[in-house]
Length: 72
Image 1 (spheres, rainbow, N blue to C red):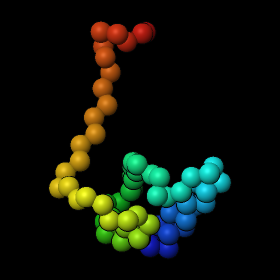
Image 2: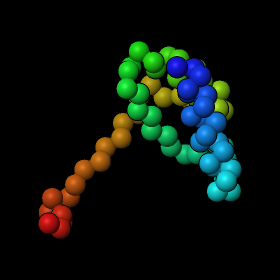
Image 3: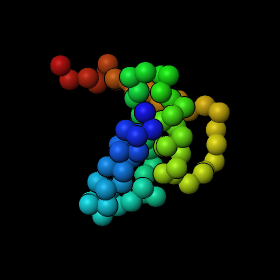
Image 4: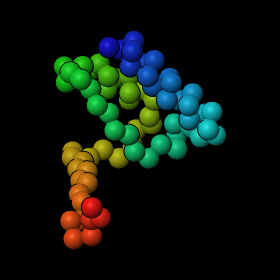
């Protein structure tokens, strides 16, 4: 997993550079792993790409539909 994780993160960095941005400008990342057992290995690689920032014990993201305004 560390090998493929590095390939993925390097690809993200190259893509950001190609569009005139950089990893330092990233404000949000969503990661989906097909096997949670790979989390520690991925996280070790992932952490190397981002500067340490404020740490929080929980993060919650919610997306919802406004059923009263939904267009069907």
